[in-house]
Amino acid sequence: MGAGASDLAGVEPGGKVARAGLGDLPELCAAEVLLRLGAPDVCRLARLNRAFRGAAAADFVWEAKLPGNYGRLLRFVDDAEEGGSGRDWSAVGKKDVFARLAKPVPFDGGKREFWLEKSKGGICMALSSKALVITGIDDRRYWINMPTAESRFQSIAYLQQIWWFEVVGEVDFCFPAGTYSLYFRLHLGKSSTRFGRRICSSEQVHGWDKKPVRFQFSTSDGQHAVSQCYLDEPGSWILYHVGDFVASSSEESIKLKFSLAQIDCTHTKGSLCVDSVLIYPKGFEPERVIKAQK
Image 1 (cartoon, one colour):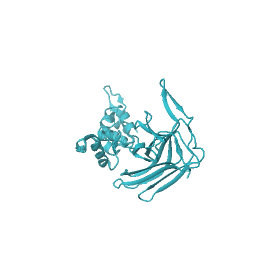
Image 2 (cartoon, one colour):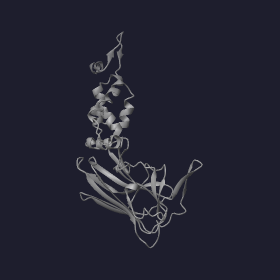
Image 3 (cartoon, helix red, strand yellow):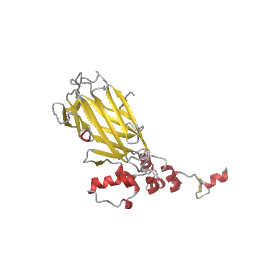
Image 4 (tube, helix red, strand yellow):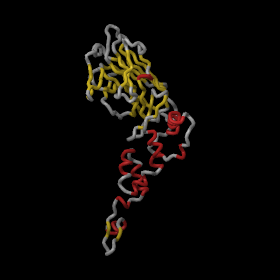
């Protein structure tokens, strides 16, 4: 026992034994710890001491946290920032690559964007209302595009009133292998700011309690889901869960088609904000979620 303790301790002048601390941890051992943590924890531990600071700068630590197809994802960064001219990413540290992919990467003219979820390193994606096909969107009797700071795209589609409500979209993307959840981000009522305070008018909300809305999606490899629920809770942004899908390969693109509809024309419905469609790694739920019934 004493011999083992001596191996882990140093001897100070005067014969006193100094206890070993985290500062004496070899950098490779620190790196082994960091490999098992998410990016935010790696950055926090980097402030602890020199060993963790050195390990947190190692390329192999950060490359392990990048998705397997990060090289393909970096092409979107080139298109967004350098007009497609290309950048020598091999000369960039993997920590900086991770940091860039953790910021939104716009594509499709800024109507879509993706980013890395920092804790687990999975891909998140958002499609704005302008990337969706919305029945009647060009008729201002039914829909208007509203600027708002409550959307990551700074704009939403606001439904005033309509008989036939249908929103359709699709995605063709090479998702890193894993399981993902698809959501519609919706809000009943019209919100605004008055004297610096957020207010929401729900007086025009109607028709959503008559029949449930129907959600569905399908993938190019045969996965599909159908569910429905009533829209509720005016004044709050809610993620309505459509379903989950599995991306089996990081090197093959998967095509998704999805829709949201309430096409019972026996009544009108109105005062609904359509912000976006969101795709998150399964289990990542940054906002209030309602799971539709199958």
